[in-house]
Structure formats: structure tokens, C-alpha cells
Amino acid sequence: MLPATEPDGAPRLPVLDILRGIAILGILFMNINDMGGSLWASFGDVRHLGWSAADRIAWWLREVIANGTARCMLELLFGAGMVILTDRAALAVGSRVVMKRYYLRNLLLFGFGVVHVFILLWPGDILHTYGLAAMVAFLFRRMRPRWLITIGLVAAVAQLGGAGYFGYYQTLHEQSRVAAIQAAQATGRAITADDRKLLATVAKGDVKRAKSKAETHAKIAAEDKARTGSFATWAAMQWSVTIFFESHGFELLFVLESASVMLIGAALYKLGILQGARSRGFYLRMMLIAYAVAIPLRIIGAVEQTRFDEAPRTIWATVEVAREAMTLGHIGAVCLLIGTVSGARMLQPFIAAGRTALSIYILQTIVCLWILFPPFGFALYGTLGWASLMATALAINIALLLLANAYVRQFDIAPVEWAWRSLVEGRALPWRKAMPPPFSGELRPV
Image 1 (tube, rainbow, N blue to C red):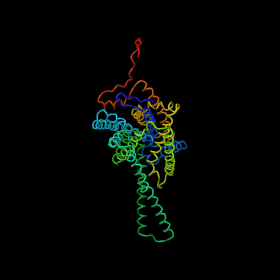
Image 2: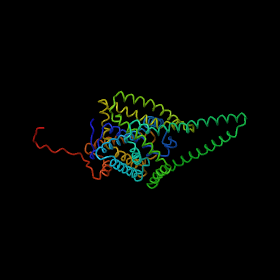
Image 3: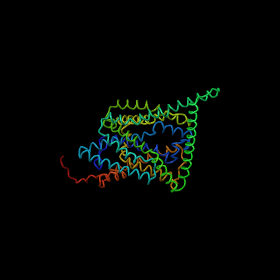
Image 4: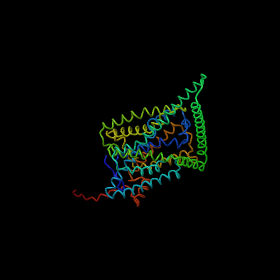
């Protein structure tokens, strides 16, 4: 598979396009439950979307194998793209011009994301977040791979240590102390002032958690009502979710997470890992080690979530480590497949999806939020469980994959990509494939 070149001269590597195509189609499996069901239920009770035997199987498969990995893969690829674009341009025009151009590119992407959020009404947009995160990651792009990986892993390690200690260990320790105090009270033994203070703190925390749980259930009910009402109530609810995320500082966390993984992606590209340049043995070891870390952590986390209790959870600490490890396992598996004739043939259609990823992402929103689930469309919101939602995502993705392959046979660049990169270039890029000149009937020696 040889590199391809875009109308604006940007190089494309088919291996990266395959990974991008898989990721952009995979992200619908993560988004469709929030498009076709309550977004607040994702933070509250996942049983709200349906909990039949088929729903539980679909949720488990999604949670263990896929949750967060499409987003992680896109972040890694964004880091690789940063290296490709900036290294190529720096040789021609210098670092200052490169920075200006790269920031313009991502400010425009941020603008597309804002339109996606406020006009197409998707609160879960990643474009504006990636636009901001890329401008942060750019500042570190020249570092050696080991430093890029070290900095990139800070977020995951901080979560592992911070949430592991303050969230899991301290909560577990507090519960064991409370159990000991209650046992002492049951036997009639006196308790200390510190014990009484702890019991009061715990009781206060229980009240706070109960209030938060009740508020979440109220938000779910309000969302169900608004998103099955009118266009006005539906739009107002989507905007209110976005305003909640932004006003509570979630955007900063999303940007830091994305920027850190982009740095890891830049390092993996510099090491020849993302583009499939390593040996089959390397990718086999990478896949096995990554899955050996990720799968047990994911299973434990899924078990903890399906207890539906207030017990402390290890997933608070391990979620990012497991997400990144699972994604690396998937990348290793894809690179192993690409190294075989049958695997390369099977994965080849995803090249088209990778080349049209931005347009596919927007189309997913249009199909789901503006046709299938809104009150003015097919009004399917709240009618599908986990299994039906995953099946719907699969059907949509098959249609989009077929559409992407038909499109790239006729055109060089997809519509949303064309608009974005034309704005960056300051000119309208050509998008139809150049047709070869008609045969004149004259044969000439080469």
C-alpha cells in the first residue's frame, strides 16, 4: 500500500486511513446511546436504556471491547497527523509559519465543532475539543518519543494514583472504619469523639449522594420529556447539556486527556508503530500485552458498574489505563491483519472511510439526531434498548462504509474535509478526480 496525496498536497498513509476509518465508524457505537436515549442515563443508570438479556450482552461487549477506544484511536492518529503535517511543512517554510498555519487549521476545526454543537445540536462533539488539544500538543511535537510518551502518560498515571488513593482506597478504608465503629456500638462499647465525627461526615456524604442520585433521575426524566416533545424543547435540552459540561469544567479535562493521548500518538508515529512499519512479531507482542492489561481491568470495571451499588470502584482509577491499553491492542491486531493478503483485502474498504472521516462523523449526527431520533423525524428516541441501538449503529455504519467507497471512486476529497481544508488553503480545492486525457490513437516511445 503506497502513500496517497490529497488535493492540498497533504500525504496520506493507507494504514493510518484504515485505523481512522475503523475509529470513525466505531465512534457511532459510543454515541448512539446518547443520541437515541438519555445522555444523563450514561452518568446515572445504564439500565434506563433497556436491560433485557440481549441488552446486557450488547452493553458488556461495548463496555469491555470498545468503550472509549474509538476516541482514543482518533486522538493517537491526530498526534501522528500533527507530526506528518508539521514536519513536512517545516522543511519548506520554517517553524514560525508552520505554527501559524497549524493553529489556523485547528482554530477552523474548533469552529466546525462549535457548529456541530450549537447548530447540529450534538453535545458530545469531539472536533472543538481536538482543535484545542492539538494546539496544546503542538508545543511538545519536537520532543523525542520517550518524552512524548512520558508526558502523554501523566494523565493516566495521575488518575491511577489519585483516584486509586483518594477515590478507591480512602473510601474503602472509611467504610471499614465505619463498620468497626458500628460493631462497637452494637456491643454497647463507647466510641470516641473522632468516631462520632467520622460517622457524621459519612452521614453527610450519604445525604449528598442520595441528593445527587435523585437529581440525576430528575434530569433523565426531564430529558426524556424534552426530547420527545417539540423541536424547541429538544434543542433547548441539547444546549442545556452543553452548557452544563462547559460551566462545570469538563472541557478542560477533555482537552487535557486528548492532548496527552495525541502526544503518545506522535511518539508512536515517530517510532514507526502506528503506520505498520514494525515486524509482525512486534505487533503480536504488542497486542497480547495490551489485551492482557486491558481485558481484566475492563471486566472488573464492568462487574463493578453492574452491581449498581455505592461501593468504591477500581474503575475510577483504571479507566484511562484500560482505555489506552485496549486501543493499543486493537492497533496491534489491525497491523497484524494488514500484514496478510486476506487481512489487507478485508481492511481495504476502511481506507475510504478514513479519507472521508470528518464527513462520516457529521453524517452520523445528521442521520441519528435529525432523522431517526428527534421528535420531528422518525421519533425513535427512547424506544430502542442497548441491543437495538448497537444493531442500528452497525446498519448505519455499513451504509456509510459503502457510501464512502462509492464516493472516493469519483472524488478526491469529501465535502466537510473540502470545506475545512479549502479554508485553510484560502482557495477552493479541486475535489473531482482528474480524468486521464482521451487516447489520441498515437503511440509514442517512452
